Image (cartoon, rainbow, N blue to C red; front, top):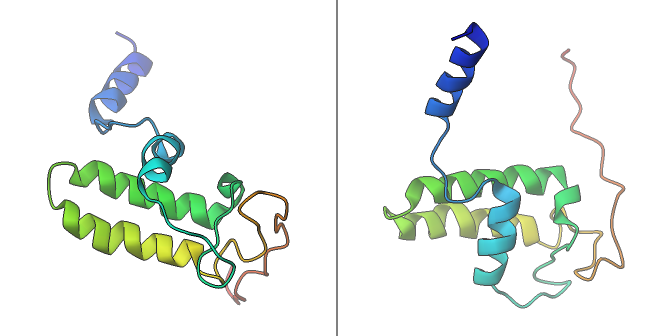
Length: 120
């Protein structure tokens, strides 16, 4: 066995056993069919091109990983502390979809600048 094969075998052994392959599959196959809410520009905003919003991808990846870790465990805590919290932030009128329309007709690509920093 080569060193490369050994490293690949160790990585495969350490890979988490997940039901879904990634957050994108989880969102499309579990989250969107399960978590349904009415949308309005004043209360909740969703973008069908959610994959193009880095903050949303990162948040939903965290929610997916927490879901994978809580299967069969404290699901109530997961709904309350992970899903409900992050979906409320994501769909807030001032959130990452603030310049988007649910149908994709309006898609906000002009993000505000990052917070300033004197470092690096």
